[in-house]
Image (cartoon, rainbow, N blue to C red; front, side, top):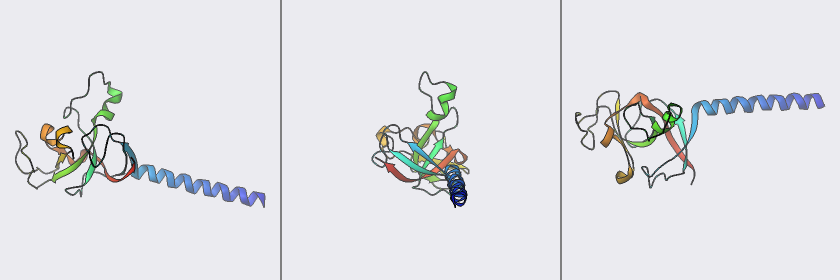
Length: 151
């Protein structure tokens, strides 16, 4: 009887471990830093994000993006090991490829080019977004925000 219970417990642990591995591959939790997405997300909020590449995105979705090097200047004193953390941003999709940009982008066409996105923060006065750094490659998308976990 004890052996059967041990086997059942081991099987349950294996299922749970497999489920957790699956969950981590498909989702991540990000912590919002700064005021750019207020009032939707505030500094310190934790957001559940479904990992997803840039295809099939819609205007209005909130996405987490790893900005390519050179798009956004890094704060002074940030080393290469921290650079990815400082390039990851959470923004709202303002327009997808083929849609007109809702704001002028300096030196770029008024329609979002193929493979790109126009991104905006919900707090226009406190956000660095496509108005400053232009269109962002859609393949830089890490995932789509699902829900607020904690405020």
